[in-house]
Image (cartoon, rainbow, N blue to C red; front, side, top):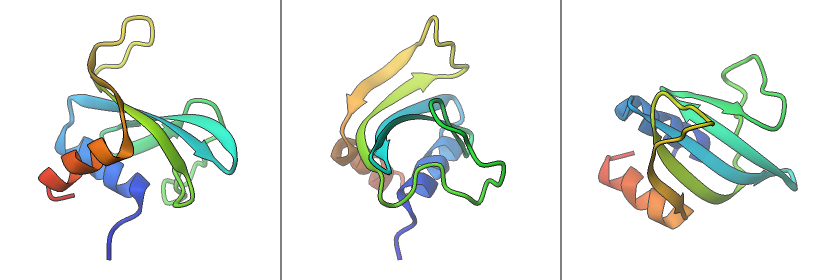
Length: 99
């Protein structure tokens, strides 16, 4: 069985520890922006549960785009690797990494 989307993105950041992912998504009908770094996710727009087992990006979420950035992430001076990747584009990266 395939892992949930959020877990796959967290696994990607564990495999690429010098990258930060910024995910623009729709969660429960509301826009959200989620930062994922070294296996941990945090919403930048909504409260994030203290329990790391509660997914920040639930299965029903619709991903609009994913940005890949170099860490450390500085919102005032972001260093983009790639911007506005679609889920299909990012899925190809996950699959090439075996995730």
